[in-house]
Length: 220
Image 1: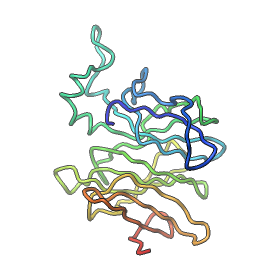
Image 2 (image 1 turned 120 degrees about the vertical axis):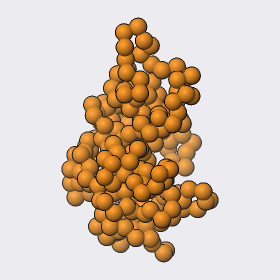
Image 3 (image 1 turned 120 degrees about the horizontal axis):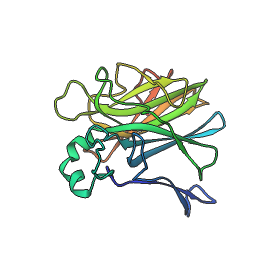
């Protein structure tokens, strides 16, 4: 999943399927750009007449700088030998289109990278909604406090799909490692909700917020 994923488009007549494959919208191996390797963790948001497809990729430009006479793309042995560093090169990007089949135009720059103030090493698992002319994102990064990787959820806001996202220094949740958030806004209750996987356990955790920026565990 970390180096050889692609993002595909499929259609169905019903939410439960059966889905039929249409095309690949983001390949694992790309020609140029910061995101030359991998396309993973898709999260699509329809806003302002566009489909904003958030995803993660590996920014290996510093790990594998191009030199004359050198292969433009790493081989399998290189990925195996550098797996830890590749893991820490994961960043969030966005590609925008008017149709689910594409073409999706990838933003030139990384949308979210570790700032080493609120989180470190990785920026992954984006969940995004568009409300009140703002883009609200929950994503996963490594906690600054722990030496070994300890994944926490953080929330940020931006006025553009490409960012920059300003993150709340207070994590959504940091008592246990969590991942793969999904977020929505309930218009009846007028509350934000987020569900995520508690790592190491076969369970999900539910959180809620009245403003989208300050979260607490929800007991329902």
